[in-house]
Length: 173
Image 1 (cartoon, rainbow, N blue to C red):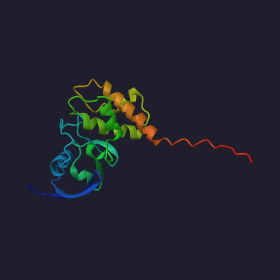
Image 2: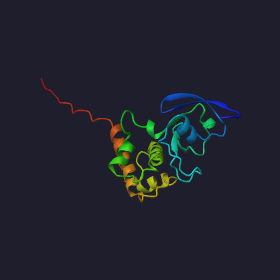
Image 3: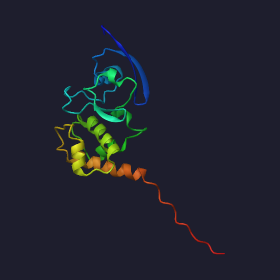
Image 4: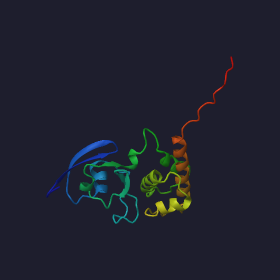
């Protein structure tokens, strides 16, 4: 790595990394080549496919359009960082609904769906399709992907719903 370097500090999947990077290094390449986050897929390098989508400061971004220096001081979540010791509800729903075939688009679809559900916890099928429109899939026809996002939304809402309080019994003396 010759030439001018920039010092960055980013937190990826809960771990802080301090690195020297070339100012032209794309975030997707930094994640994969420097940090080993290979779940973030290099697709088209032109922002058309969405396979490289990650969450940066809580927002879905296509990491092939973000320079690593732009992530300085920010939190980045990759598909590897979603589960808390297990699968995230969106990951589980993709598995349960068979929302993948070759799997190439899956990390980006999942990350985009997580962002969509953070903004809209109860989307319609049309809203899911619109929310995912920046992500391309060559294999599935999208039906199972839409169903997976819908199922994940239901599971996430159920997990957040407060448990009903037990009915109180009146006791007479």
